[in-house]
Image 1 (cartoon, one colour):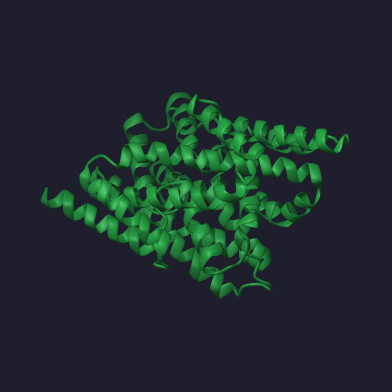
Image 2 (tube, helix red, strand yellow):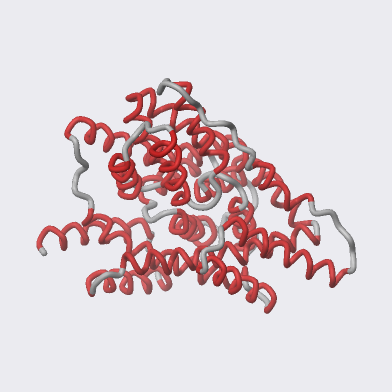
Length: 381
């Protein structure tokens, strides 16, 4: 499939990413699965190879990976305006929903019961991720060397290796193979980019003022590699253990709010900002944690094509893509263990899979149907 020529209108970009922002439950791997289905399969905006390049490059960046993929997609179809629209529409619904839960939490001291929603939505999201792994894996693992790199990456991450290390190692191995085949020497500067980006801004100290909130959450946006779930470890280390701004139960409630709302897990920052300084704190925490991503995703959208044109840089990206699919497979396994807990959950997951594979049904409807069924089952069980 070739990239669809031309550009998309701002309205088309807005409609797609606003809908994804309202329905994309399940975490980064699930979000990427939804975007692959919408941008590659349903709209033909780009080839699966081009989409993989964007996913692989965004996986090397700090910050919310799936949000950056959304921004890079927006850039590829509408330039910087498209990036702003895609990023804003993907982030805003999650932030507003999380803000509403934070208001309820502060006012009433607890969150609404949401276990049923997660119980029904997660099996469908497992099916979405599995479909994306299958579709993207056929391209990313297209030869023996890439398949071995992907399987090695999967084994490494299962053993506990950091995601960024797996991505860089896989890319480095492919550079080495390409260099041996071509017997051409090259520099290694491309591998250093993510490491240079990880030089963090220092966390703010002192009273919980708006400036302190902004710079602490800006740091998270710059230094957190991996998925949104890696952010949770940083939040505990800084906000609970080091700064003592919140308690561990408050952090757990914030994580729950981020899980039951669609869109990026990084929207947990909105909840925490509200706890720390009301609506102004929520706005600044949200702005700070996502701000670095807008610039970095734009650079990915602008330079991914040029990177692919270099033989050795393209080999590095192939290795990163193989490892990125391995990371998605690991998420599917992990989420599957937690989501497919009984016969009803297995039925939702297995029932969704053929609809995703053999029909053109919009996956958002399946997710919402799963959530509704889950709430009904929990209510009457």
